[in-house]
Amino acid sequence: MNLPVPKVCAAIYAVMTPHPLEHEDHVAMPLDWLLRLRGSSDLGMQRLKKRPFQFLIRGESDTAGAGEMALATRIQALKLAEAHDGVAVDMLLPRVIEHSSVASSLTHASQWFVFEYDADEDGHIMTHGLDQFGLPELHSFGVPPEQKAMYDAVLTGIAFRLIDEWPEKDPIGPATITLRDIAYGFGDPAAESTPNDRSVDVTLSYDEDSHELRVTLHDDPATSLFQE
Image 1 (cartoon, one colour):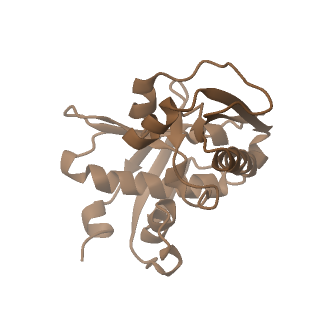
Image 2: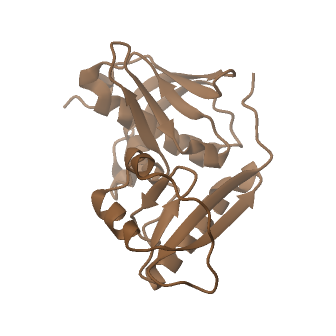
Image 3: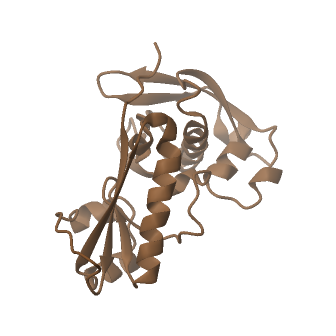
């Protein structure tokens, strides 16, 4: 089975400003609790409350151009916000975007998604945000509580590879995720010189009913990636 390729991918940003721009849009904003759940900071929320005027920026492309479109649309929104003392809100994630247009990067994969956690005995980690690239979200089950940060790192490395390789390369099947992949995914300035000889083997399987990429780790990240 190959992963289905959507025909259209989209991005939508609300640029919220203290004064109206050339016109004002009136699309309902995401609720505060959801913005916070998706990673918006207290400072970002405070700034948002003081900027009541809305200007929407939309982007659309086929899946092959989704990365380029997503980046261009975000940079356009951030530049407009920077020019007018505004705040850019990713309406599809949804989240207040708090890095600058200069720092925006597809390589820095963690800028484009957030994690959701379940703290029960069968703890899981799931991403939100990869759908704007025409990708299913990543989902890993049975995560040991003491290794949550390590699984976060592995999924961030996977997300970096997916954004970089999709849709030219189908992600279903085995993959090897290196420490360098993870460094790129977190936006580490030293990623290029990060050792590439530490890795974990994973398998990505597609769950058609939930439209998720299920992630199975075959190595212990504590020893394979992070042990001194």
